[in-house]
Length: 294
Image (cartoon, rainbow, N blue to C red):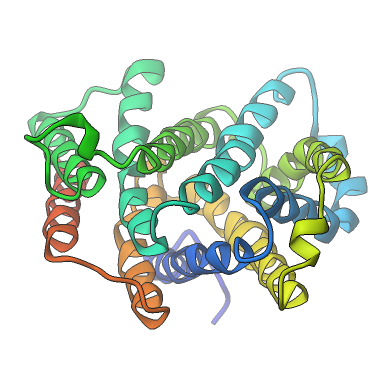
């Protein structure tokens, strides 16, 4: 049976596979941060992906033209570059499982961006979903202390929220502005525009503290796997899924990601509280309502 994303069964298989890969990405970031700082982990992730995709550039560069070059750049920075730094920065102070749970906000911002920029008209269920999702997100960020002082909010969790907004922009760009490119082409060309920037960033960073840590070779290997699976392979699937299904369906992968992130976090000794479970349940209910048909 051949892989065919025009079929619903393959779309769901791809969605579940993406959830597992991206749900595992948070723990790989955490491993990388044991030796390298957040900027180095993000830059290595991008630069390794750029190197992996080197064989594809000669063929795909011909797909770039005046009409799509700006949209490719927007997709590259909102879908890969900026979120990579935001997530690693956040995980210097919050757990990988919590980062995975907050990541479930992506469909909300995909819908909101679609409404603002593409004149999408949501129904009452979508508005209800957005409200519930925001309540759930506040519960995750504040650890259930929504009504208390703003000092209780973990500011680092807001980096993840900002990353989900970027993903919302990216999904709509891929869906509405890059229709003529395949998922492989979009992924390849995106890294072509950001890979050298990441390389320059790495050239001017200090690696002495990282090299002084035990097992830095192993942790660098975790970052390589993060690049291969969490960026290159997963983005091939994600960008293709956006084309064959929809931006909202593709971003609904983030409904399932928290469960894999929580499982990996538990294996690594992290703590998941009842407040986290209740908050993510409220957020997931909201996301379900967002995707509910009229």
